[in-house]
Image 1 (tube, rainbow, N blue to C red):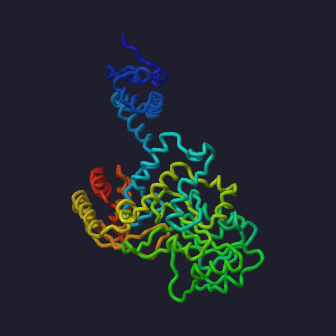
Image 2 (image 1 turned 60 degrees about the vertical axis):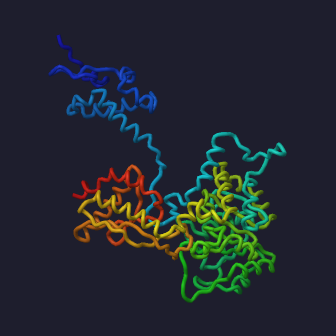
Image 3 (image 1 turned 90 degrees about the vertical axis):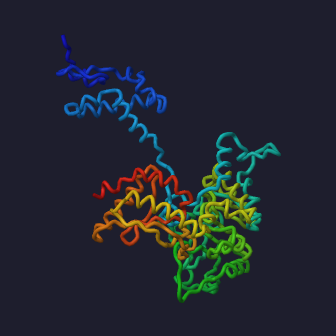
Length: 489
């Protein structure tokens, strides 16, 4: 005699076999399924508890659609497949590699500087074991974590002392809070910049407890403007890198030397926020000049702050270099502990700084400089390979061309200086409105690849700048999953 299960019984278990016509499926328990060979691979890969929870979630979905769910949905092989997809998706890291074809080398949203292999290996070494982060091995007592990189920074910049915090904004905050709390800081009005994420110099000055004293005008500031603004409450004369913009035409600004000399004459501290900051003269690689940290300190500036993950090419951090007595005051500020770097950052930074000691091989070993100085012929080869694969994949639905374009350095460095580059231009056929619509779809489809490709839209077409594409092979392989054609038709 056949036995029919109640609805409640059927909803509490899962099927493992095809039923006789007119009957409910024969059911196996979750525990039985977990012990089956069909799900063994999932259990080995993800663990018993995640697989068990995924089974129960799948059962809830089948309950909600019990009437129309096919019997095959209850079979172990189908369950394993569906659950496996869900578990793989849940296990995929949120933070993962992408291919930067935007044309911006130091792209803030895409992680800025790529680390050299030496830095990655150094991070792995200190991550695997205990290390002497704040321990003096020779003396057998507590040490200072900045000591691991201070001598290298001083050697490369000419500074008396240096410290490291978690980014350049933190460096500026620490300097202002330590040296100018409840006192005024004189800054040219033309240097009151806003950079990414709505970070504004006046805002961080306020948070630091300092009072902003603007001088000059947006386009012209003279040394006398600084001199006339100095009073008994003045603590700092500050110069700020213009970051993401440049004023041209009828302009005037005071050089570092002038500000530094005036500060010395009046018994004040001079401070330069270089933003991106660089340790080498970029003209050596036919790139536009950017004031180096050494040049700035040589001009007489007391303290300089700059980023570690921009032109320097290292991990995210902020470095302050300059007079030893002032650095000592910064270290004593309780904020220093809140803003300090971890062992991974210091390990990576130490290796990057070490590479600067070998300038002849620096461009070959430091990814940031290598990408900025990359020959156009090498970029064109990568663009040609990518264009060929895209032409084959997209067929007659779009025009694919290798074109000349301009890259940018990014992260506020030399904002108007373009770097001649080569890229792939992909334009759908049809009206301008249709081309615009399809360009957005293609850009989304490229982001949806197993290895996401990030490009940009320019004049109704997708442009993939290949300056940062040193190895096209992984991208070419990932293009097999491109589904733009099906969406576009």
